[in-house]
Image (cartoon, rainbow, N blue to C red; front, side, top):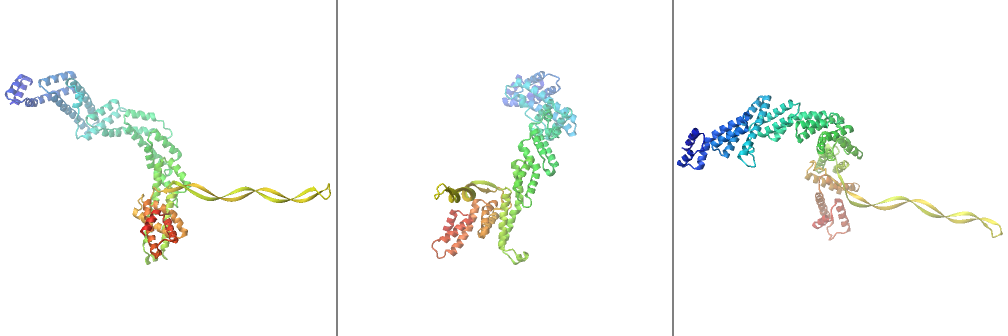
Length: 598
């Protein structure tokens, strides 16, 4: 009943602020809140129509904003519109009008009407500016909040679910603006694009992708034009002028310059024989990186990708048939690395990867050789090998292959030689010394004779003469010299050639071979024993454990045969155990534990 009464009063008086409605509300016992809700149901459509007309006036600009707001104020006062309803209706009607405008733009986008899109986007942004001015004026009369009315009302986006149309509208407007202004983007066009992206909520990421896609080629063309001659790079002002006119972000500019550097680097590398840059080409590319402000780290990455294969080929060539790079080739290789603009870290990485490729079949060959040693000989094997290969020869070949692997890694400088204390060494040196020697010499001397006064005689007389002579003597001297150990960053396990179990088995066989070797080979094998373990990727603890297990077997065998009937170790036993300890490079603690356990 109250709702009908409100409708009747509105139709008759055009307002709801009179005493009549208050009397009816009281008679019908309608609560104040319910009455307000029912009134707004009837007044909202009327106020929406008033706002819609006001926004149409804002778009047409036939009336001033002040007069539009004045008319709207009269309507809102007659309808007793609350500030909340006022703001809600404003937002819904502004959003509706802007959405309708964008849908018109979207239709032009779908049919590829560039002129329609350009005008539609411009009109939409112009209308948005007018609406904001209108809202700012309304806001000053309605609220004292820190957040402006315009900010709250415009907190929406239009074109939901139409990302493709938004993106293409942005792209088409941008292209059209550039085409009509000699590939330059005016401040007005730039501002329009920013406002359009804001109201349709085209993300900064998406807008930058489109922006770079459209204007990027213009800058790329300019940078390419000014980098044709790497020894005459004087077009910085020209490039900066284009950057300023296009309004690209610093990140986009840097990316385009990087792309040009990559292109020029590739062109120069492909033009060089075998990809080996000349000194002149290398210097030109250095200048180009500086000219384009390419960061050193990024330039190094690109150079490693483009020039790395040429450096790798040179490393392989330097290895030759022996597989080991001679010391005399190391410095020229490093000079080549620098000429190819590879930093030390990436050059070393390429070098080590090349060594690893050559090292891989050598490591896998050790596994095969070990299996061959451990496989029991058969008549078929002997027939296959002719006279057959003895077990001793297989072991010798296996040991040689292990030492060749160590020599390969060390010879190619893939092992790091680290100073590890000092040693005192004695040596004999020969030197020449001077010394005085005495000898007798007979001289003829004239002297007065005693036989006849006044007369003389000549007689022989012995005299002692001192001479200085030089002779060579041998002297033993003691010198303090640095002691070195090797670390192997490149190992059979690190390059995934073999697993830990296989590495341990190979090392164990090498230690057994070293222990069993005759005197002429034993010393050489012992020299390589620790290093082969490290090359295989074993640490000290693992090598000690393996040596200890071999030592345990040797001790058991020795004590089970030689110690029968003995209650204590004699000198011969101690000498034998000392030899075992030295051969297996066991610590005193390990030997003591083995003795106790045995």
